[in-house]
Image: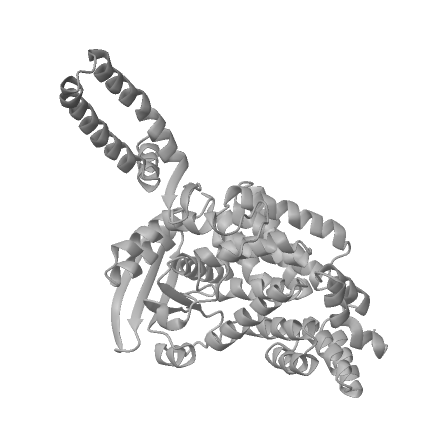
Length: 512
């Protein structure tokens, strides 16, 4: 009951209901006092003063209800959105709607430049001080959740390192990522007891600025990422940052088993191979069984199914895409303002060819977490294939920015592919070939990029190189046959012109 009342009071404050009520009471009192003096002087009948009192009382609940529903923004009176800060509500009111998929140019922009961040932090995956596989995933999951928590702070740029060398240190991470701080940590579990140590180092000054040890029983670690993120925010001296963490962070499950399974699924998804995706699917489905209301589990399953289809690993693309759509809708219903859910939804909808919904979700995600360059990369893909000149120009601007800002990001190869795709859509086939080469140099197993490279090479007259690229694509991922690649292109092209640009060279040289 106390928790409910505290949450309700916080919501009243967030929606400015208390402020509006106090302002109204003060205004009404002044009006009543003024009328008691002015009306007799104007020889008005006594009932007019009583009318002012009665109307003031009647209007009070109306003002409270309107304050709950609406908010005064720079765009005028707007409907308040559930679970958002006033700033986020203002952005949403002038931006996009995930439900309707309606786009608005007011929500468009570019990833912020690095010098606009109050601080930049590299989050190194926490080290498990045992060789147990569950402990390794637990450690990775905790650091991943901290990354997501910090990424929602508008002033903080987060760089997440997936697999640092065991002898890596903050100086090396800083040299590669150009960050101000490095967060490292360790996890040690003994039975039901767990100790987590987190250290934040100022790499510019070469000193430890914050360190904390947390001793918990295993079942009590669900909200630990919030505590650590708040501790980091507090080390910057910012109560505002702490408030942002408190408003935006938190998992929607009480099941540690479900949470751990989702962390495993997310780790396996990133490998994209047949065995890894099969494991990820199994973990995600098991997490849903353990907690059917866990949004991240539904989103993880949707992501796995979409990746299976895109990689040619699905036995029935239509069935898997339909299930992915149901699962991501379920996740959005539970967590409509979670940037991770929105990002995964945008990616799933892009692969399914639902570009309006994908753009709306991804614009919302980058509004909430402007330094999540992964979400910007997904948005770049969706815009590149939409088939309009304005979207294509925006795709180039976004992709150029993140390729320049984050060369060490684990998604860099995919951004290079998306840039090559944007160039191909604009008939810039030589440039497309250059970026596609960069993509496969970073990620040789990326069969899409090899197919795209082959197409662009064929369009520039480099037929022999194109044939080599096609052979390499089929070797990199035998499951992604030319027929399945054609289906992928058809599904993810906004119009016939984009589809032709992605296929003309392959068809002309009979490479399919």
